[in-house]
Length: 308
Ligand code: UDP
Ligand code: MG
Image (tube, rainbow, N blue to C red; front, side, top):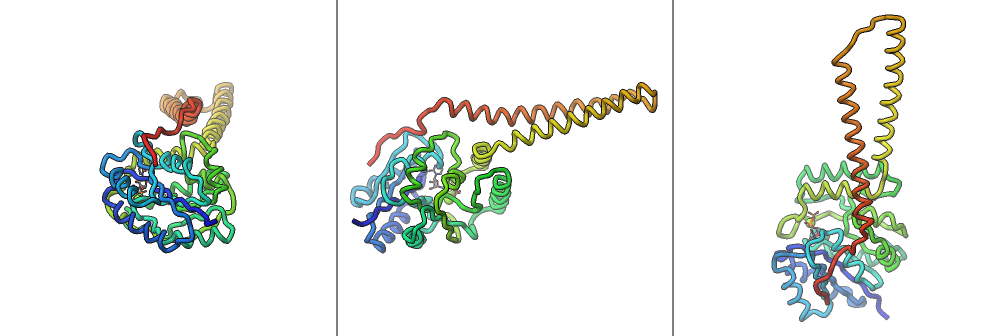
């Protein structure tokens, strides 16, 4: 029996690239007819004609399937919804905007067939993205890498191929504050890297703004490491130690009456500094407690309007 492969495409307001994408996907399945192809579009609450376009295409093309989510949940959850509905031998995740070339998929399949479970594509260049985005992304990966024990591949997006084993593993991870890229590393299995040049968006514009990217970064750090909690504890410890030494010095100065002078500025500085450190630590603790709060509610990750 021939092996089956799902291509998962999270889609949010992508009407301008979909026709192009259908073409490229059709070419892909035609070039590798020995596999059973499924193209699974997860419509993440698009407000444009994306869903109509997908449905229309699905009427004539039996390979096309779709899940229509009840609202916009964000790319991470859209991918999860797709993973939940995958029961093929392999799964490839790509962006709808053709930044991840479908032409790379045959190479991924080749590596998968040679025995690897997770073939991920690392971008060696990213065209059409601002230097600020590249710089912040570079910094973020390094901070995340330094602060967690999970090896997280840098410059790796969601573009990758998973074996059934990985799909089944991911279906069991039900956390709400998801950071897929780190989760994908965390599940383990035999990984293999391939390199590619990330193309600019084929059309339309990016669906991520800086606020969402910052949130994603905080999710990434807080869901994979508790190092920030430790840092605030260490700062607290060092300050207490310094303060104890300072108090001893003051007592000695008072007893022996050397160089003793009341100091308003030094007092203010100390109070403000300690206040700042306390608020910072509270904020960090709060981030984690907030996450515990959302996780304990244990809500379903998404709801589905319709699917085919
Ligand atoms: N996407 C989604 N839900 C969202 C935002 C984006 O499903 O809330 C999809 C989007 O349609 C695209 C992919 O996620 O297929 C990547 O989005 P985008 O290209 O905007 O991100 P970038 O490439 O700029 O990081
Ligand atoms: Mg993109």
